[in-house]
Length: 204
Image (tube, rainbow, N blue to C red):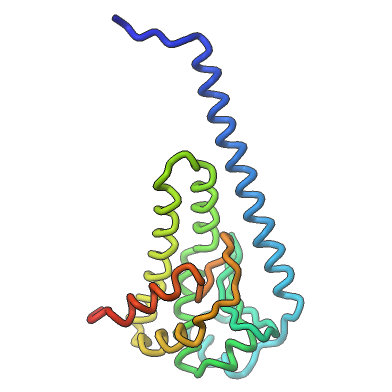
């Protein structure tokens, strides 16, 4: 009563695995190139470091890890797969007070220290590669949201919860496109959920 598989079974399995690998490679390449193009376009107007940030950055030990760009949109994200950095726009810096800027940098600092741009890119690639697993896309979306909550909780533990909520409220119309290679402070996919989570949270 032994189960006998066709002689072509090993070849079919190998072909299937090769197809998955090929899809993953293409997905990774596309996501990487989209992010690279966005970063290149974003940094066309990179400027010097404004005085408003110097004391905050020094206190958070983020010297030489932040880039400032001249842009009218509110931009804040962590980028870089192996040597992550933080990008802020002049419009965002101008619109936030010192406490709100500290909250933003605490949040982005978590992404930087945990190499989240790389983790997010690999997670997105895995969900595209294993497209035949229905729940994987939802798992990947939940993972990204959980990373944002973890970064927000770092801000809360540093006593800047109200400043975080205030900063998020000012960025209800995010200017960052959905990319797999960056960890944006205010992503349109989960911004409202984060504000609800923060406002309904009764204790740390």
